[in-house]
Image 1 (cartoon, rainbow, N blue to C red):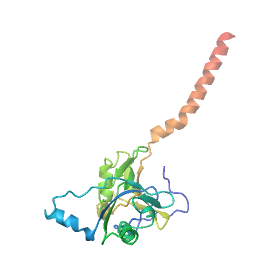
Image 2 (image 1 turned 90 degrees about the horizontal axis):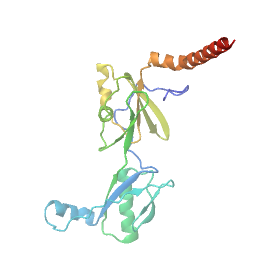
Image 3 (image 1 turned 180 degrees about the vertical axis):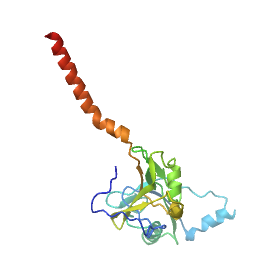
Length: 230
């Protein structure tokens, strides 16, 4: 699985320890948002104990459709795909102010379905790891997946990431102490982390030989039966 095809370059140097660009909202993403007026004055008052009214919590998730838009209250169908979280917040604040007359709106957007998929090196099973923060490292993601499997090659860890609409393949060697810096590589949403498994020669050979052995055994049984009937 995930064998590197011909023509695809494995990037083993210039590994980006930090994202070169902020994550941009894309189709099928889910998010929540909070809206306050007066630049969020109510939040500050709540923190200072000056307002006894509870701040409303927005637990409703909004889904980005394939056309890049989401159906939002009051605003209706609104384009959000292609924006960073900060850009999305600024855009929604501007729309609420221009179209609905809100006074100095303050918007907080939170993506709720950011995750990475980790293949720990046992040859099949994968784990989906939710990203609780924007600074989750490669080592943290692997640890959350249960660590590198017994069959996994620490010397060949592949990180597959979309950069400028193109899938890039980074390969790091975590078996050497001098490469410890790569454990701090910041993981981005929708990354695939694939730890190449070691080949199990015995089992692989058995898979190839078993059908042949079965065929020969069946032939011998048939020959024996015919010899007995003569």
